[in-house]
Image (cartoon, rainbow, N blue to C red):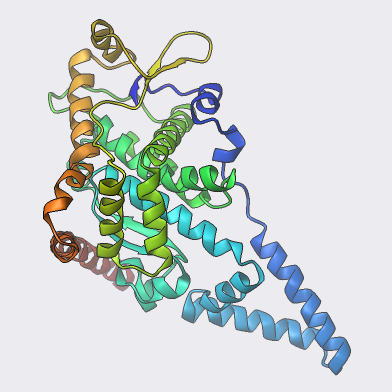
Length: 372
């Protein structure tokens, strides 16, 4: 999305053709439903067998505690998916949204798990020792990582992260008319942007380009990320559906990436050579256009608190990230599926080594804190 970063709720609804409520994660009633079901079952068992109800309640609580402690709640999750089978479909399509947005942003996906059992078996999500998620997609942005280490974060890096994080909510909204999951994604974005207030958010020429992140600006960035994610998922819908199919069949990372690229080739999906649309700070709620006369482009880039030069530089940087992976669609004809998978796995291995080193460093720091 080009132009201004100011996205009003009205403009968001107009462009995405989705109500604002669809892109707002709802509080989940899963635990409440599960609690009611368990209570009914315990009551029936107590009536038919004569077993004390209090004993059954304490046994259930103990079982749930041990399941969470040892298996990250995997047994409870498995039982819940039997009672509510639609949950797994939502989880898969939610994570596929993160996966595809990360791929299109040029950020290597390191792992994708769709259940607590999967998280237990994947060291990138903590494994058996530290697993704390039941589903998730792990990606790596080398540019953002470098900028965070130097406390200099550019707007284009913030935009990439926002699109990827909001990709899951966007996918649920498009497929189910609303997002049941995603509260954790919103919290991650809020935490990330809030922490940037302590960084020097600048461009390479040292000019300050970002105001302090507050409640209003964070909500606006979340809407911008959701808008961009929805448009990307619509634009590359065949690739998204192919990815969902690969995930449902239990495909590994190589299989998933091959599915994306094959869908791109089969459906003649092209790299993004320009934004899918532009936001203009005009009217009461802003204006959305898909085409701009060439003479107006320079004026558009000067909108907001950024100079034309800064906006143009960041636009080029983001454009490179957007097309870096999609461009491989044109080249896939010359490679076999085995070559694509091998090349992808080799690249991911390099990033995995870097992340493992960082995790080891964090573990050592935590251990030192415990010793104190």
